[in-house]
Length: 87
Image (spheres, helix red, strand yellow):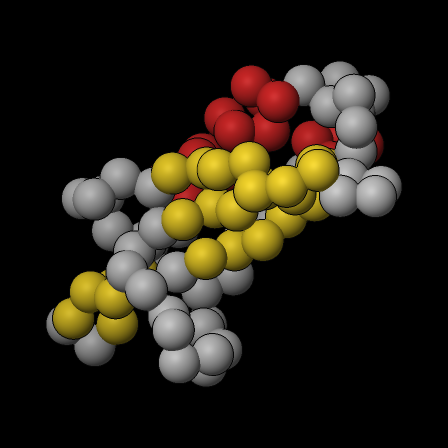
C-alpha cells in the first residue's frame, strides 16, 4: 500500500519519518513483516512529498502493492504538528 503525504519545507524530516512509521505500527491492519518504509519521492512546489509504503492484512491475505487503484479501508492519522514544520 502506498500512502502519499506532503510536508512543509523546513519540517524535521527525521520526525516525519518517525511519526509515519509509528502510525503504521499502531494500525492493526498493517503487517509487521515486511516492515513499513518511508520514502522521500519529490520536491514539490510547496511541499516535500513523501510516501509511506506498507503491507496490509485483508481477509487472511497480505497485500503489499495496490496497483489496481482500488481504495483501502486502512486509514492513518498524522498529527498536524508533523506536517507544519513547527516542532
